[in-house]
Image 1 (cartoon, rainbow, N blue to C red):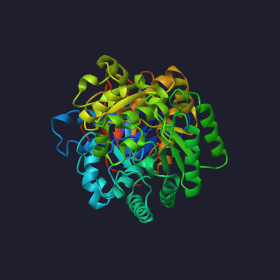
Image 2: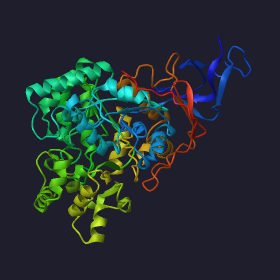
Image 3: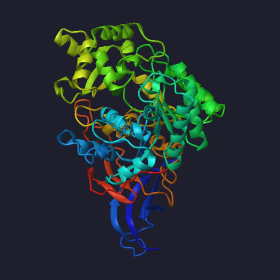
Image 4: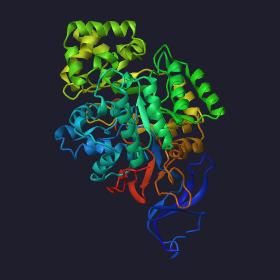
Length: 545
């Protein structure tokens, strides 16, 4: 045997399968793994020499973490697209993920991404993606062109992408509130089919977000059937995660059954005061479906707050026609009054986050032109101005051209713990890495938080169980062949962490602080993080699945 490119010595191997950890050394040659018995590769052995050695004594060696739910589609493209001074934080945003041990990110979630689109709609799509992703990141005709754009920008970890239904719909119909015509639906199915054949990971929906919310169940069934033909999952942000969460879950089950696609429920939660505690009903329902043979899983992030766009706090009709139409409505006092009434009284089929929680639970995360609002709730801003909260939100959206991100403190800890403990739940950050402001700390802290708080401190999960949720389970769900486990011949995507000290340090005040206890991260056989610092290596690529 020739020498290794890399040798990780003396660690406790937690291999991603859920089996008990065991002492082992890990050798890496040409980006692939060889598992060695302790001492099988003695120091100085010619047969087992290594160009680089990582001392893992007292630490865990695990597969690299797979973040199954991100919105990182365009963050590495920000500098490449020439964004200027507003994008100076992009490098910090990019490395936040890999510093917490993530070796593969899965983007294109919640129905939103950078592809696909008909060519004639690409200019309009580009304008919309600026709002979603916080800068000029482009819009692409298909997965292949998206992957080609990323290939020109070196990255530390890997990226896979779902096809977003909302983006697909906008790329064919535009941001309009009406059913897709038969010919339009055929075009959407054809674009989806091409992207999946090129290597996209599955179909995602965000049925609370426009324009995805304008689609009926039948439209989604037709598209999910395309994913099923490719053996790829239907991944959904449910139409309602609040008072109608059980009804929304049943819609997802119907879509899965009628289409034949495996079902994955994104960031499963029961949010808002009218839904707290309902995981006691949704989780047994999912468990029963699995017992009946249905292929259904979910993911979860370990926080009681979420993050999204401020415009999502408005009724769906407010966004009909896109940003220009929204801005015009926000400038009309009569339309503002109509929005106020919709929030107070509800709209059939609409999640209504504010109505389920209140403006005092909605804080501004990013408003680039109004940084003084960041970290403050809409209710607090309204009280300070002596104004109505809806007017404050509307004025801010107009002044920021729609580009406002918020934090929604909408969940309770008991529900988060129940989902984390579910045997079919994997881990996703739902990270939204947009430049500026105070993004949700989950983008920098999710995986160390699970290991530190929920494994070591609370004992909610066994270490091996938590690692399985972050690695092998996630890789199996999304078809990441040869990843998520440490076995001979597997891809050398690895993390070395200290189980006694690993912890998240990112907070809502300082959301990009790197974690403690992540000693080394290896991607494609190259050490990209050493002693908690990036090495500058950029072996990551877009994965075609």
